[in-house]
Amino acid sequence: MSDSETTTLARERGPKPGARPEARLLWLLGPAFVAAIAYVDPGNVAANLTAGASYGYLLVWVLVAANVMAVIIQYLSAKLGLVTGRSLPELLGERLPRRRRLLFWAQAEVIAAGTDLAEVIGGAIALQILFGVPLPLGGLIVGVVSMVLLSIQSRRGQRPFEFVIIALLAIIAIGFLAGVVVSPVSWSDAAAGIVPRFEGTQTVLLAASMLGATVMPHAIYLHSGLARDRHGATLEEPRIRRLLKATRVDVVLALVLAGTVNVAMLLLAASSLRGVDGTDTIEGAHAAVVAALGPAVGVIFGVGLLASGLASTSVGCYAGSTIMAGLLHLRIPLLVRRVVTLIPALVILSTGFEPTRALVLSQVLLSIGIPFALVPLVKYTSDHSIMGVFANHRILTVVAWVVTASIGLLNVVLVVLTVAGP
Image: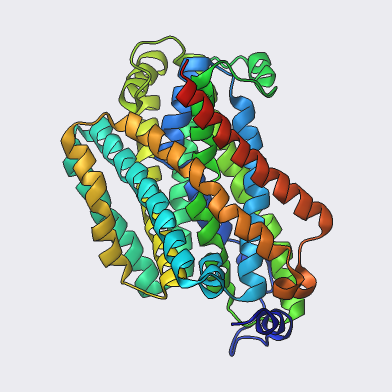
């Protein structure tokens, strides 16, 4: 489809047959909460606990900055889907020549695989913590349960799927906020952690991991499709304006919740796990939480981690399907994709590779993949030929490009410092 045709679509789409504008703002909320699951997945747990246990409150600023970036990015992603009636992968698939499209799909699939790896491993660790289940079996159980969750989306539609994911998000929030309530957090030190600074190569590595776990590429691709699928691909201009207003509320609420949970993880580790042996792994961190705060908090922590793994692996598989459909014009059943993408995680869990280390490294991989999703997102949402009257204002465009450049710079610094060594 040409740019002129897309412009016409963005400006002149009529209402979806049978659709009725919702009377209440509350009913318009939901897609951002599904995307927000990507911001509280097991990769976040590993990166945030490692950062807090190793460096205290030093990297609080990374989470604050990443969450502000995430609000901007997720709003732009949803806006793109609402205005054009297409997901970001679909727009890329229409505009990239075949060779570049295949290369872009390949890197996006690698990133999606890294995402799924973290989520299945995290769920398996939770099952081991709670019930002593061996890691490979735990990974298989997580995969099977995620198939059940995906079947809800396949059979019942997006809205029931949203309700299930939001319920799991509530469990995640309780699981990780409970520890902070009873832990001896130094709020003055936490406030000092808002000042940006590093302390060597390892802190840069962790910052990139935390950033990759917060501003996740697959969530950027996914949210545009979620917004379009929820509200329809044919909308009149007044309804687009109402939905954009609702989307801003949706994104802010969802990501404030996700950001609060992320900061809570780091504060918990900084206040209760600093200097404790073995807290460089999730299992060790859980044991330290139990020792410091009691078994009840340990169980709540484990339940939150399990909910995180189950919800995020379902959403991650959904995102992978969106990427493939948009870039390759190929759709395979979600459950088939779930089986295929489960295999790498089960292999890693079976080989004895330290699972928390695999989680942290997977988040660094995600951070490297962020610019590939961000650059076209900012470019398309700023283009009047694509977005028409809904193209980004100049200030938003500048801010979005600054965010993109900042993430790219962090990755360059990460590579340079890692190669140079400590």
